[in-house]
Image 1 (tube, rainbow, N blue to C red):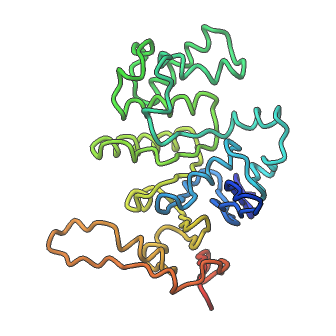
Image 2: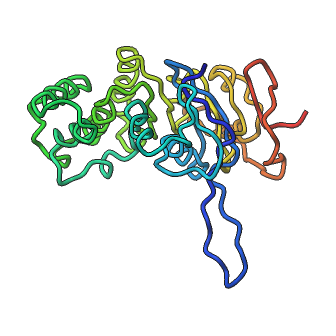
Image 3: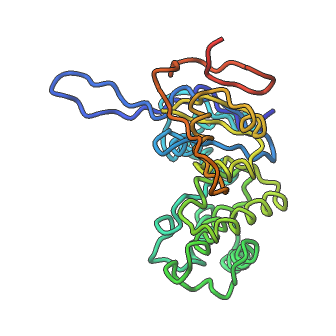
Length: 294
């Protein structure tokens, strides 16, 4: 059984009505399905506005989906009561994209990391403080700095604080929503290596949301490509990069910068009229799915 199973997920945002005429909503997530196995890093990629962040937040019900199923260890998260959802969220956490806006600037960082433990009523105050010190060490921060405020840390350090907060409840599944896109390139590798190290040490499973395809190729075992709210291709990472099937995937891959300054640019221009946006996924090779015709 997969750790996470998403079936026909839909999220539609309403539009403002025009006088008395009903206006159809905007489908940010349109019939999305995929699975994530235990210990896997599953990549979800696409341009800004493709629906990948909305998909991630729907999985945790930070945004309520319009329809579909999200199963975690066989249990439908979307049908969980508020009390049960609270329990499930101990095992399902998220690291947000922006380390500057995701931390409360008025709270000391020790209190930020301790907050999930306090909300769930875990341990005494002394036990929670020891757990915070342990988490600081786990993500490579000095526990002596627990009484500082977020603005006293660099972007990379703030993202480590956000990661420590996400790990406080010992989750098995973490959604990493573009966790390094707001960081300097020199810091990105440090945070990515930390994520991989924590995955090995804590047996974590990741949904890794990103637009940096080079990064996805490095860390993900399978990748789903989103275009206007739909998954247009899903495959093992090597197969996707070596033999992309959908025109949008090919265009994305052609935009990856080439380190050779003398190489001729080979970027493809996407022609949306050249393919059917509503085409269903079909298996073109074993384990490789694409929304293309026969």
